[in-house]
Length: 79
Image 1: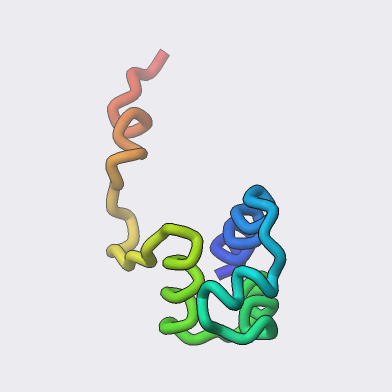
Image 2: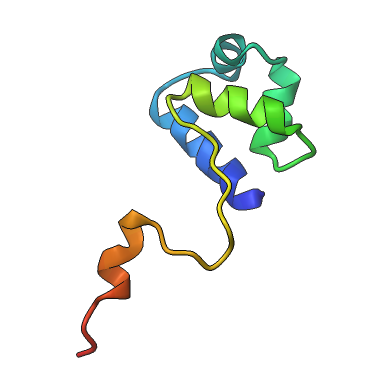
């Protein structure tokens, strides 16, 4: 969760959005957003709302699966 929390904080700051503004857009309490950004306990519904407010969707996938963006690394030729 820490990786997701760091990414959330980075995205919000890159867009120059305050915690309160994002919380309002996501319809969650600012404290919930603060908890999410510090990798504390936040419910899945709140995570989905926050992601949606940033224009993302939360997706669960099995571990050790390859996503489209990782394909160049998978097929990279050894030098």
